[in-house]
Length: 343
Image (cartoon, rainbow, N blue to C red):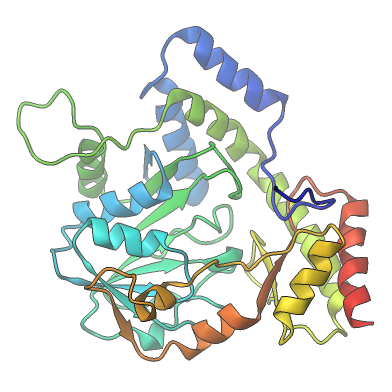
């Protein structure tokens, strides 16, 4: 039986404008790959500061198509951070690449110093909304699934986004590839749809629907207010927890997709918050390096080092509720619960 929480960890923000946009598409009879998708692509590219956007069915699909279109050869190594979800390893595996799992820095993002020279391609997420350092060499794919709307997305050759239900903006499911390279954009557009072609090469059914794109266009317009509210909540948390024995996030260049703290008593801390109706979670369920150590990762995946900082993060991190739907009273409930555990 699913627990009902007083304060949800995360929640999509869907209003009347999103409902009207989706209903308009349903009434139009044009449900796939039409003007709403084209509009969402252009507006998302403009928001991130890129020339081209290509809408797809998920963030994982965006990564897969990007690796494929970049010509990353089968067996070639792609560096990914150890402290990340399974999506990055999934995309590299789908493309026949070797996931080179590298340790992270103190901000939980990929440590550029830990990427071996042989890994010429790098996927760099901006984890939890904190802008990551970008490796100054190789081909970098920025993953802005957790940071869209901030300053990220323009440092790599290409960026990918996700619009899953609880991301910064949502289309239910969905993703986007963003680039300034016209040839790369054309290749990805060609690869996302297999039909109506004179030639045959393997292509993928990775299209976004018109309903999703219509919702996404509304969400994109609301993104600045979403981020502003997240930063307000984060500032309250930072003030309230400053004297507690918790590791707190650095607010610089952060959009606070997640508010992640560290504690040596993670299990007890989580139990206490959840028992009081505050839904707190491990921010990464099973990090990439653990899949390798457990022997359940693809056989080609390998560790670039001991990943001790990623292991420490997995043992100590707690993600507290933060989303634009929280009221000031909700925020104070979280504050009281966290402070009550320590004081």
